[in-house]
Image 1 (cartoon, rainbow, N blue to C red):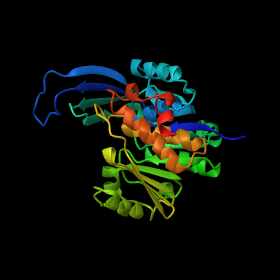
Image 2 (tube, rainbow, N blue to C red; image 1 turned 45 degrees about the horizontal axis):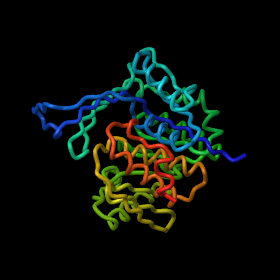
Image 3 (cartoon, one colour; image 1 turned 120 degrees about the vertical axis):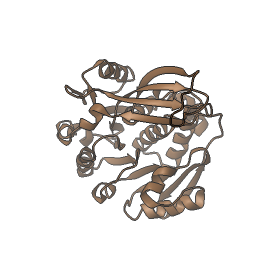
Length: 305
């Protein structure tokens, strides 16, 4: 039987967002902002993006035993996400993100991880059956590295494809990088791992070459308004981004990753999957918020054909 389901392993936060004319510098108070609160976290955003793309999604995460955690689980269930693998932490609060967004859509994010930092390897072991049965395991870096190591080991043993989004960038052992089927980085993350400043297609290729020395899988470097570069084995592909009027870029990368994972789970070629994910991400930046900005399949699938 074809495996088309996705497991997302990652963070769950509540986003507290203020949109203002500009981002404050240290010591500055900016008045006149618009406030709203919404579910977020890279893991949760990507799980929602994959679910709205039509995938069957299980979410391995940890929330606090508080109102934010309870609201998050209710929300994920409403999105059609399987929540049986979400743990509740009796000690640590749910993760919180404070997000500032300026008039051009640029953002600044401060995160208190709370229970996300307490998602342990043994908890992944307890629900490993969902990884064993999945087509794709999608991971980010807002949870402990030891937990990611455990999940990637299980996925490799059961031929589950692993997609890793290196956000936020932090040191990764070769033991994890060697297992990755698709590695997704933005320009700042690519520079973190390679010391190559990615400014154009040529420098993106240099960074992809450097990363592939440790990660034998497909490399995707997202370059914002420029688009994405793919390195698949010894082949390179450029996928220009659709031109849109950006309002808020908060969940663009997460939208890209979730939609890409759903396409890969359906055995779509990487190039086509990136085009689809790029179209979805372009729509997301025209809207405010994280999960509130993530489009549904019907909004971008026709434009991608």
